[in-house]
Image 1 (cartoon, rainbow, N blue to C red):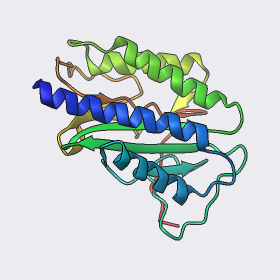
Image 2 (image 1 turned 180 degrees about the vertical axis):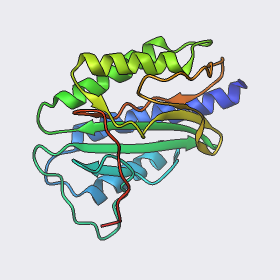
Image 3 (image 1 turned 45 degrees about the vertical axis):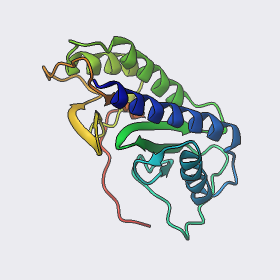
Image 4 (image 1 turned 45 degrees about the horizontal axis):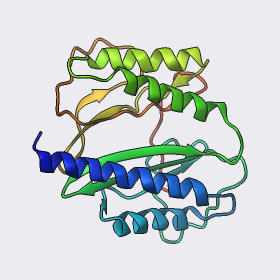
Length: 203
């Protein structure tokens, strides 16, 4: 990978990581999700990046891909599971970061973090997608939970948020092999038992 391209990816990742840490220090029950989304996007710009896509904030049963509108008055309540998903790009080279906040201790969050760590630990050039998926699946099962089957990890390319390969969180037979220079996002979506997310209308 060209050194400048690598630096752009790394900068996008560093900005996303910093924004996550700052948000975890300020997020709390009573906060409007539109205010949270605006704070994230503002901070991305301040740190020298640009949003790769509109900030997604899903609460409880909303698993993913909900972007608050300007008139959205929904507030975070105590005990809510708040899924925050945002991306940063630097000259088109993107990071994609998601995490879950809850004001109370939650085993789903712990299982998701462990599954992500397990998936990251096996990544190396030459590993197959099926092997990454197996590691994630084994971690989730060991915690006693399941995954949302039709939400997956994916590749990242210039101005392409969802490039190949698709990386499921369940056991599969994909023989797609990672090579040096590939950029991927792992996305283990943890739930009580294996299931599927369904599309819904905008509220």
